[in-house]
Image (cartoon, rainbow over all chains, first blue to last red; front, side, top):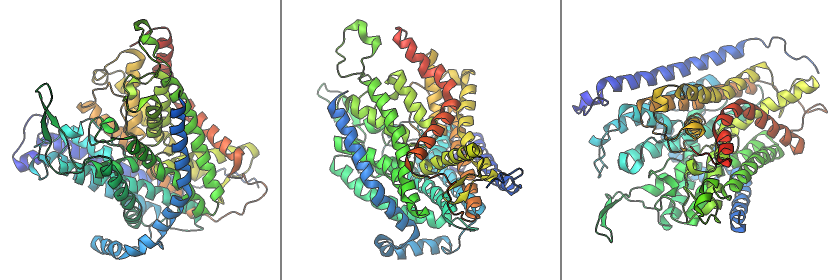
Length: 55
Length: 568
């Protein structure tokens, strides 16, 4: 992406495909982390089944 | 071992202990407001909130807090990635550094945003001054502040009664940066400059040596980056050699200041916890547990490094100074052992010697320090919330022993807290062992190793341990600047940071909503020898059982091989 925008792709590893791939990976990672927040929230909304009732 | 070595350790320990209480109190005042510094800078703080559209009076639930944190890091990583990819087009690039490759840029951006500072590049040959200052240094401040903010949010969960909110992420981030990190950094950066650390935007200097060859001497804004790098738990080096470089660590005083900066906030936060929950004895108990684990590790490392290397015995070398391979002569074995133990016990990762050249037993301790999940002081904030996770396990186990619902500083520890604690504590081992196992069997992983056998496995295991534990130090010997290592290490760092922080914030939320339970005769005291012993035992057993097989295959096997004259 940066290579195309600024017209400076210099080698195979520095082209738009790799930039897009890296940003997609970043998006997937943070999307997963956000989903993890909701999963934790769900887990803690469950009742404390079998909780210890000892004094 | 020498008396000078032990004297250095004693001076360091005394200075660290002396700073716990005053700085712990200052942190409370910094975050809650009310101190003299805070009043002086209040207009600036209010201006920043107005600029960002933040209402400082509006607190957040744990979910809002976690999502704000994730959004902040998403933008931060994307911005740093863009900066590293575009640095050849941007100003403050006198050496005309080219763009980083995409996989290395992603690895570096994730590394510094997660407070890891794993570096698959050499700073002076890769980064422009703009990237060093606006990219690396800014992320050092932010990642350190985020760790402290999360720890304080968790402490609020313990301290508050029936509360829906755990604080405001943006307010915590701003206050920690303005009132805690910046003032200490300004003062210590001036000390560094006084001692000879460069702080300049001038280009590198070309010099002609005595034998007539040309040498390029790298310079740059080193002091301003170094102080926050060591204090934030980041530890990244301006130069490739990190704190072994004479411009990054020129004198004995700068070495001592760096080690103090690495530990200072982590230990002070134990006192901050004590003050916020109204029991400073508990803060001292956590400090004592950290001190026991730290001193035990340091004794093994210093003891091992003071011994001659058996592999050199046939060559009749003078090894009275101990194992000097990979160590700076001006630092010696004592200071190098102390620095390495401090750096790995914290989540810092700065180095002033080559960990790859340490004796296998020392390497085992350095790895174990990181594998224990940052509990021995750890990074700023991350050390505190990590040891609190083990506290929850310890009081839970103690509660099971007597058939009583566990309590900790007035809050009942129930299924929700234990579930989240397990999620957080298992994330790091899963990232380390899972990814290291894959790397150990596929050509993309084994192709990066410089050594065979147990030592090669140690290089690989150390790298993923360092990444997932957000330490960032390198064992060396691993060619890590490949797409495979850049991406898998980025994944390990991401998991080791965010998959721990989210459950920690969840615990803060669930605890904050609970009532306080008055202490009774059945309540486990959270201070004193019994509690410290229980906590240290829990950490050693849980951490040891998790990682013992991997350590046995690497440094432990290499130790016994070395004793029989076998090297790799």
